[in-house]
Image 1 (cartoon, one colour):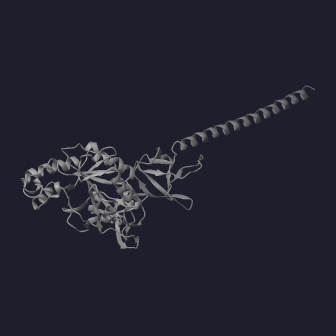
Image 2 (cartoon, rainbow, N blue to C red):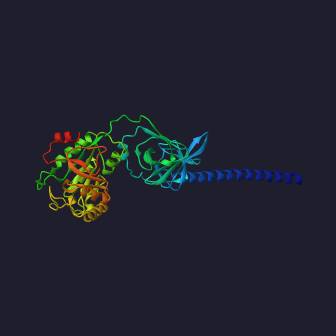
Image 3 (cartoon, rainbow, N blue to C red):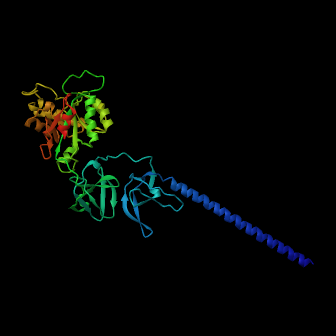
Length: 412
């Protein structure tokens, strides 16, 4: 009897141990499941901390292409390069984000969230592409503002948008990049565009603008707010591209192609010129202010739509030389002219100059050349023909009583 009881006890104990063991393993399994869930949540949280519609690289890294189920490196990307990401559903196995606009991927850990993309210059989208393509070598580097941005481990074959002494510019990831000569394999003809290009450029000139309620300006070269608005409305409604002086020079040198409907808007002196700014910004047209830099502060004319160029520092003085209005550019000592002009050029950070009173001669042209200017603007009431003299660029001036039809006839 005693032995039977001992056996029963052992059986009961064994069963108890088995039950406890099974319960332990169940609890342990649940523990590890919960632990794994928690760890997975932390992983997803970490990945999500890098994901956003807009990101930038946090170090020099790479972009990858999916081939046969594997990620293959196709290019290097420098630090602080911005991207837009595709919408994706993130899980614990997400290792790469897909870049929008590319069929490429980037490691999630190599990017940081940003609120929005930086505002970049898209003016090149107004240029007419050359009927030429560039083929690169098997490894090609892309530069922006003299800095390396991408190193591609494959060749490209893209339309040329802009040319320079260093190489050619192409569009890549919705930005303009330089391909240097050492990375170019060949350039060949290709019919990229049949759009009409500019051959003669109208350069308009204004002086003083008076706004509604201001009737003090009585000169013939005073312009009402309504007159300027009518001009700008015509330009915008007819898709004119309002260029800068540097774009004029690039166009003349065959480094960019401009659309047939292009114009350079200029303003002289500086008096009342700040009144143009709200209208430039309203209509989103660009203009160049030839400023007498010792008379007016450049800070008065800050606007993304207004380029500052030189009308001399303090040479807008009549009666100094004989003939016409007597501009000092015609006869004053060369060293005095150059000193003034250099001061003005450095203040305005420009290579463009407008002759006071539109008066010039070989002496004045030599002065602006020695001062470092590459362009000189005058009068003339005609368009500037491509290949003309960049030191005597003609402009078309308008009076306060110029009608809109006269304006259209002059620039068309």
